[in-house]
Image (cartoon, rainbow, N blue to C red; front, side, top):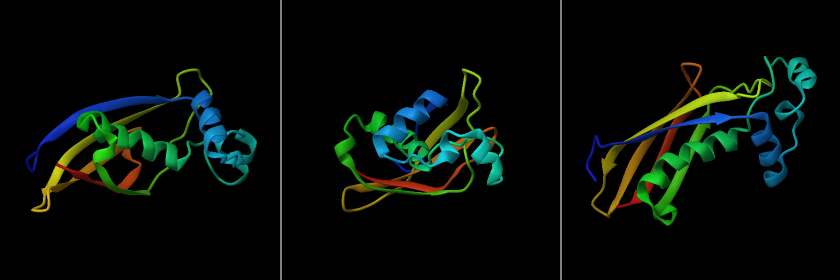
Length: 132
């Protein structure tokens, strides 16, 4: 593992069905994730994906590359923009890329993830510390 190594990218379509499944698994039934009328009332353009779902999908770039999610030591991100999920059967295309940013003497490394939707970044400071 070397600084600058790029991980294989990942493209994921987030659908309304996924939002329902994630809501059930996480017990996050906030209506901004399923009710268009409520989303509009609070100023959103439409229903949006759960931030933690987006973060989990982003983490797949690293765990898939490592082959062992147990090597992930730490993971954090900030939610900078929502992923708007239309009810069109196709959903929202979210693209993830990642790069090794630092390699440490303690056999760990930091990997930075970029997550984009509709050409704009949706996660800020998405960083994963892994065992090398």
